[in-house]
Image (cartoon, rainbow, N blue to C red; front, side, top):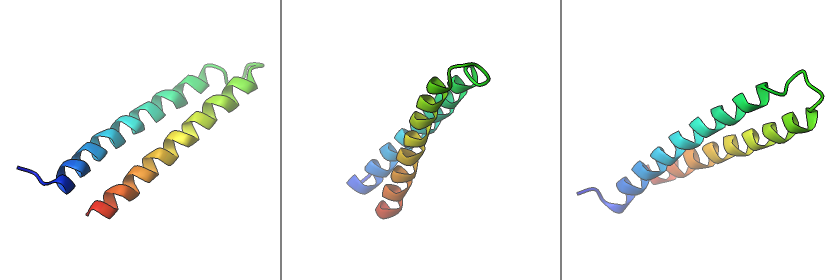
Length: 67
């Protein structure tokens, strides 16, 4: 049976993978509006992407602490 550190790391890794997938999906959404007059939408979507990237990095740091 995995200890609390291993199970926490496994769960964080899975969450990190999901966050990475969501970041990619969000980034793809911006492509629909690039070249249109909706720069506001592109800016907002890119902000979401940046925050998801930061979440990914934070998860990676947490995983390093658990190592």
